[in-house]
Amino acid sequence: MVNALAPETTERVHSPRDAGSTGPAVDGRRRTRPRRRQAVVAYLFLTPTLLFFAVFLILPLGFALLLSMSRWAGFDLGDIDPVGLDNFADLFVDGSTFLTPILTNTLLFALGTVALALAGSVLVATCIDKLRFQGLWRTLYFLPIVTTVVAIGNVWKYMYEPGGLVNGVLNALGLGSVGFLQDPDTALPSVVVVQAWASVGTAILILTAGLKSIPESYYEAAALDGAGPVTVFWKITLPLLRPSLLFVCITQFITGLQSFALIIVMTKGGPGDATNVAALEMYRQAFSYGDWGTASAAAFVLFLVVLVVTLVQLWIFRRKGEDT
Amino acid sequence: MIRRRFPWFSYLVVVTGAVLTVVPFLDMVMTSFKGPGESGTLPYRFLPEAFDLSNYRAAIHQLDLPVLFRNSVLATAVITGSVLLTSSLAGYALAKLHFPGRNFIFRLVLSTMMFPPFLFFIPHFLILVHWPLAGGNDLFGRGGAGLTVSITALAMPFLVNGFGIFLMRQFMVSIPDEVLEAARIDGAGEFAVWWRIVVPQTKPVMVTLGLLTFVDAWNEYIWALLVSTANPDVMTLPVGIQLLQDYVDPTRTMPIVMAGLVLSILPVLILFLLLQKYYIRGVMLSGLK
Image (cartoon, rainbow over all chains, first blue to last red):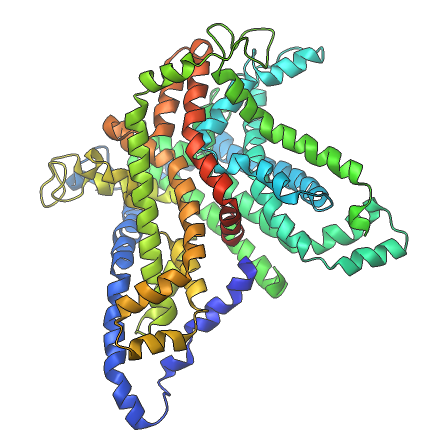
């Protein structure tokens, strides 16, 4: 449905009426006054929106850019001290934790989430497509999406405890307990699992839309040729699902790069920096240490990473044409 | 009909997945009924010994739940109302009115969806702190705590939503111009045309957008955390419950935290179950929410 909307956005804006060819001259003159009044009304309708964008979009972007190139400890606007690109240099200086482990963690977190969520959602979405009561199943898989990150984070944190459900299951299988969030080696993968668990529902929904657009006749033809379900999955479903897969993959990757609420709730970046990611580091520099400059510089570096991924996404979808 | 062959494998996968999805929620509910010393102990037990309601009472008292609830409801209501109103107004202007700069503004709206939210946390917070003539500030935003002292701070950065405007515009484009023109000839002003004709026609989209916005606003955590760190009076449900979790012994109070979580997700869950058709459509439309 997203895609059905997309093409017309660019076309409808260039309304033929804007060209001013509205029939005979008399008609044109008669129409100018209402037209002008319409412009006034239009701007009235848009006033709240434009004011909001000015104060909460354009001003903040400029402010963030200024902060990223300044040193500013306090709250008095007069004390902002411009330092050029020093803040950016500080992030990448020898001994800084920003590149490793923080930025590395960010990429691992995003990649891990995408890999798990994609594998899970493809498997479940293709299977749901073959069952009855599809709505019921999708509703169940949707529960995490409508739930606050505080609930998800805390329940999983509790389940990872020595006396929690996950270790309970491990113990019942005769295995020893694992300190999932306490051990630096397992902490990041443990959080990745939760993030993937929380995003599977959305992915299933988008993949379902993709599955529904695959013509039934392809499957019938395959059945006539005697193809088994595994062959059908690899040769028909997966290739034809590629646009949806790509969309899920890239959007989830971008979301993964930016996520940090779940990490704040579950580990606060710890133990050590084992689960620290770029957005969390920005948040901590700003609101724990009051270092607006370093924080804003970190935000822009992460923004740059997200921007590059977004541009790659746009480039891929342009190349694919309208079928995405 | 190969899609329907070998359903046992599909059932196995789907049921296993559904169990994995639902079990954490069941664990949350079960834990919320556990008595003292029953949670976090070895060996792990799923079911409570007796369904103990005292955790819910404790959550309501220790959390000051009515206040948190009020703050959450207020912020969510203001955000949802504002997003619906501004999206509908702006969407109508962009879809059906002709004015210079329309193209540019539409592009601006589209571009707002590309900026990641984390980029705005710092500047938004500082802008609210330095809001002129609020919370003891002078005309130049100095001296006081600005808007961070008031509950408006919770809602301010979310009052307008680029995606909402985009969504409304896309649906309004398909309303025939003739209908609007007829109303104008009958003497209706643009405001009347919008209110009497456009708004009723876009009700299903409004429900979709309203529900998406409601769920996001109700579950919002990071911004609410920032604002309530500056001013604990405006704390919302997620922030309050997280705080309880942070400061008290986790093994003893876990059932209370879980009780609070159950209460906090209940309103959204009920709304979602009632209107899931609209929510699911919204997620499909927004693609990545």
